[in-house]
Image 1 (cartoon, rainbow, N blue to C red):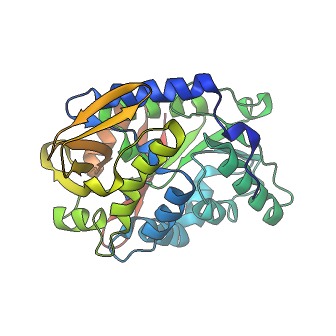
Image 2: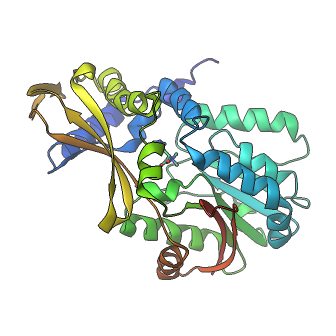
Length: 319
Ligand code: AVJ
């Protein structure tokens, strides 16, 4: 597929990205945003992760959707505008759309223009009567919806995949509050939330035997090198996935195997041997801890669907 011209960042965007990466590298410990995982190779690797025996998340959420999408659609009701945050491959979305009664519109919101239009195009083929309105935006910032979506009687935000787990608590609360504002008092949020479980299961899910997640993690550096002209030595980092009990989260790190200096945006960044670069948080909730978080954003849990092993949950929230 041809690269959409607007996916090549303008100079000013590139400077802003460079500053953002530099800011993270000046922190203690050093940080790199998980958005860097998702270039073309990264998205391919993530699709492979979803198929790994250790990575139960995607498979389990799909299984929950297969079992309960009809009931979810009943709760959503007719003529709803379905707004999806971060549209991905929309496999789960299809299971929902197949069950919805006369949906008013499907509004995928994604920061990657290329992925957005690719996914929307593929969906349009299979759902010719559905009004599909892609919105290219960063859903962590304020963005505008088309007027007819804003005035829809029933607005539903769909946020599958447990992506909320990537945000720390204040950010997660802010994001949930933004969803609440978007759907209004007559709306609802349908969200995939991964649940706390044996830390060994979690650590394996983020450090698979085949090394795909390790490659996915290292690829964030490859992406920064290519996009921002940095010179991270890809062979000089080890992948690490560690369960942090008091934060109830998996953290993905890259650990430097040697003292090295990285050049980026005219600056030099020193990384010591054994120093960690934190690339991702994956918070895991209990039903109670998530309910409390949602409540701080003005949302109440109305229904929870889970697999029989209670690995994962899909939750319906309402103001
Ligand atoms: C796409 C954010 C849900 O946190 O499990 C997979 C990303 N990172 N393996 C997750 C991911 C490492 C994934 N999310």
